[in-house]
Length: 420
Image (cartoon, rainbow, N blue to C red; front, side):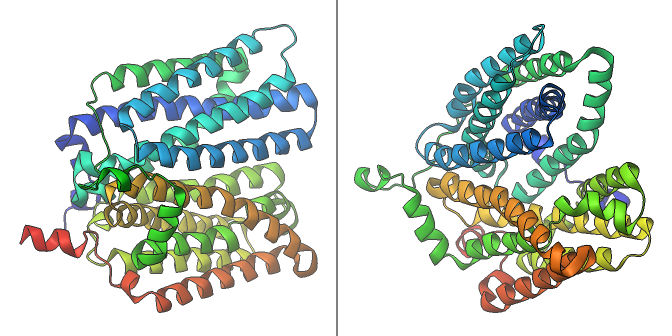
């Protein structure tokens, strides 16, 4: 079998000019965002000398993005999605410029950095549902999973290389250079969006009264009715809530693997490396005949990998299990994205996407909290082991209770019937 068949499917980039330019613009923003995130962490620590301040900034960013996602989902189902993306990025550019100006001062303002974190994450949250919801109409439902894999490949590469690049840039010229490159990323996005056409939501012929209701309540009601979309959200919760112990990595590196900062860095990067490789070789994955079943297997493998990490006596073996967890998560995410977008009507896609991404933001924070709480009575290995087992069990229950999700195909039955 040809290796080419296993490589990431680039069909969405070849068939859709709008998606191609949107992808270029998104990449520019993503690189700038990764540089800025790292620079903010460094600058806040340098100005405050406090780990608590860094943690507070991260928490502020989490609140900002969740709020933005929930509002952005409503906007994405009401207004032209291209207009949302462009409009939201104007104040985002102003925040980027203000960070640059602040960094150039002899005494940068610490309080401003916290305000910038909240503003930047809120604006990013506003735009994300529109970006996600527009993809099926740009590339076709059969190519949504491939588009997700392409986005995942770029995201993982930025996640791996971004912090390292930011470190080099800060060492060479200071945080202001990271903020300056972020401004360049906004310019790349602005240029790219000039080549993207309108992306209005499809209200499916609803009457005016029905289409004027753009509440999150409608999205919740739809998720309760649609077992496939409900399965996407529930499956996503299990690894994030029970088996995402990043907060334990510093102690794990020191106490279990006796490697200090170097081991911590490797543990932090291992899952990203696995996810990047999985995205690069995702060609067959995106064409899975029963993606719901594959998601169940992949999410279970994540939990099993955490069990392996908990029992690993050597750092190298632990890194292998973390790479497996990252690859499993990427496979699951690509297929979950396709299932959610293809089984959600366009008139609701922005709001349902915002619910999914909001829980994906909150669940890891809660997961790290419970992992830290369990580490006291159970020890590091015991806490990670318990989380991995809980993840596998939770995924099994969801798969058992939702047979429609197990049997789901990437395209809805109505779409398949109309093409036959």
